[in-house]
Image 1 (spheres, rainbow over the protein chains, first blue to last red):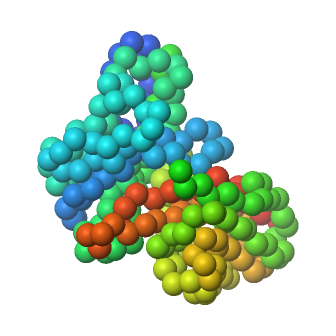
Image 2: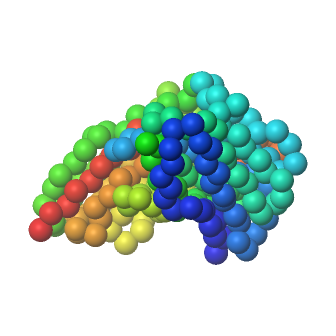
Length: 116
Length: 115
């Protein structure tokens, strides 16, 4: 089946630094990928939709300059948290839309970001 | 803004009991998916329903999509400790291109099944 690999699984960084999270589709091409954020014991909140070769579409309230999304190829999307602060600590999850499956989505295993 | 409210938010039951989780919205969705998520992992798809009134069964789990495609329910029969997890409903729409658009996730139901 369609698999999305997300790395790293967890990362600890200092305030003010930037962190890059990668999401790769292993056995299919992902034209569209989605980035979610999840706080402890809460549901997933969509941050942005990334389309290969074009600018990402951000949800209302999500800072574009802080959460940089790049979808340069059909198998790779990256989320960079710039100038991270403790309030950016969260669980970030990517998802890819499975081509030719109208309702097909597959999720990465998530990245636990802790900013100290 | 499309919102999906799940109830209950938290449920703690003993092994063997039955339970139902509800997912309600004022918006119409083209599809409704149910996921289960373990701590520190991504959600895993359980089922997709697309037709109003549709009922799907997956072993001890029964899923129903409301006639108006605004709500859904998940019923678990004879719950087991392995059913413990966060259950999420997610509504999807279909773009004019025929491809699915983004998912809107429900508020989540945390289920704990004890021996």
